[in-house]
Length: 244
Image 1 (cartoon, rainbow, N blue to C red):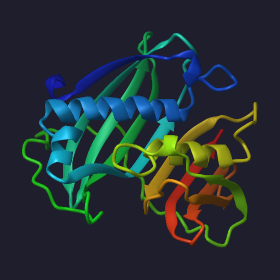
Image 2: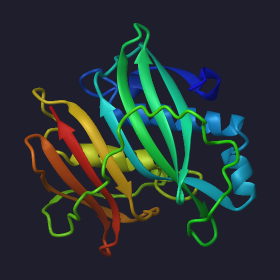
Image 3: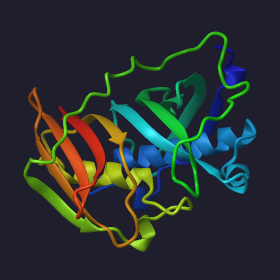
Image 4: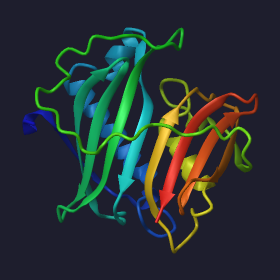
């Protein structure tokens, strides 16, 4: 793939972006990726402002992140991202994150859709010029098959705050990832660290909603399957985390 097809963004890990171990957690990576994707979309003519003016918006449908290391306060993180075209209604964008030494600290696959801001339904859109002739895939795509956790034990309960809401008037996708990670029994462990997170977005949560995170052990050691629901039982998210 021609390097001109890729977008590069640089970030410095701030003190307020690290956890109690002085490491940038996966949600910090996701904020960097979200910002880099927005910058690139604007360069390609699909900025959030332009789309909102047309009554539509990008929404994240699926994401898979593999994490290899966690930078500390003051370290620079370099995000490279590029589009990979559309399949049905989902548009794929990949990411690679490095630190100054050149070490790759994370890779990610994301799939995006376009919704009508009034109806909140998916819309088909012509993605002219967003499919490379020689696509470069950063990771093999997962199967995106995660079981429902409706009957699983409750792990976490919280209320959606105003600060959780983004400019599309729903909970920002990174907060769901944060809640998924926090609900894991390994979140406070010093013996295990997050190796990957796979997440499927099903429905929107709104301001003042009560969100219940349910979960159970997966098929392998260190695997947790998560499900997020509102108080009415509507499924919001399915996710799987692996800890090593």
